[in-house]
Image (cartoon, rainbow over all chains, first blue to last red; front, side, top):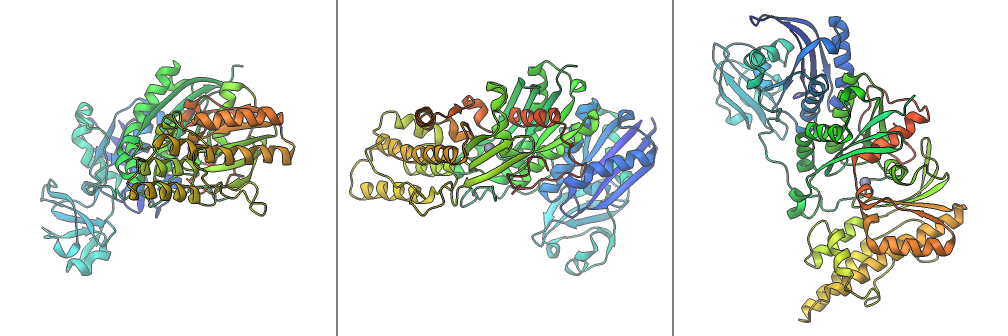
Length: 212
Length: 344
Ligand SMILES: [Zn+2]
């Protein structure tokens, strides 16, 4: 089965196409990792088109869509999640959501990504790759990491340990989605892992949005 | 060839709207709203609205297609509000619309939310006269537009310099202990009141003021002061009279300026739009003054005045019909999209 994988939980959006065999072997056919800053909405659909073209497949051939559910900055995260939901809905194929941190690195590790506000998103994994802690959001100084740190190296100083650079990959997304792809009826709804409550401070004044 | 089937996505504020039109025929207008979640904050909380849009998006598409009795594969074009509005909220609809357009292999039109408020009237009253003037009033905007060609050229004549009209309704409602959003409860309360009971100020109506701009901040403050003075004096607040007098001040300024703009520009058609256009006094006064000035007034039914997906589909349909170039695949959202950009 051909699978389209999307992730917008980090500043580098990922769009990949992979072939997954019935026994779970994954071959990544094409991947676009695009540094996007906060331009996920502009760049995601072009990246999906490019990945499909590079893989030499049409969207109509895709049998499932995998989406990274974060955690990540909310606005960009939602772009990937709603894109995956809409693509899957329009094609009538299952959409499967996974924790984006599961798709960073392999084996025993603690994954850290930028949560802004001087905090990191984190999750810990054992040698078999099973998640043993997190996902959570914490100040780096307060993170009790297990195993080597991987993810965003800019936090090494505040974590007091080196961080091996690693990002979300198509292979990682497919691996994390394995059980759900084997049994799509087990897939939950595509709900982002926000981990933080909304800043429910209303605008002091809902200003007119027109400028001209 | 039958007219194109267009699906429109609207998520600029707190309404998740998906509308379906064929040509100028409205087939479906599905809506989900997070308004109740914002009530205790007295205003729309952007992050709460964005989360609600994401949750509601696919189910609302399903409702719209079912209501229209069409399949996704029948869709000929997709339109989406690209701005102005709340960025995070806009992006949910934009990303969804781009994905549906990609998956269905149809053109995508990003559209200006304000122009869509004008276009929606074509679903009810047929082709717009051009040029027309449009008065758009809601919780997010108060604008006077000149519309020489809805598919290509819309210009701003005036806008609010401070609060939107709907915002003033929300704040006055709060002062009077009425629920959020303030428009409908003030309209109801005003029915029992005397609109001439209290002479509230009419902003920007002096001879040297900008003729087509609006200001509602002073009015809002004047109402609050008047009510507080009553409360301090231990006297009961005549809620109906305050509501009626406030509503009269808003409707008076809006209609006077709209009629003047029509006269100054030699335009004899006026379209109302936006949530505040559902206000009964604004509709009645506009009716009266337009009739006196020989202006044809067009007001969509209240359900089409408030934000919805049908308005976006209506403008998308208009753009497709006019042969306007669809938007590029890297279309983004612009929270302050200028009104002269009908389709970015
Ligand atoms: Zn609006």
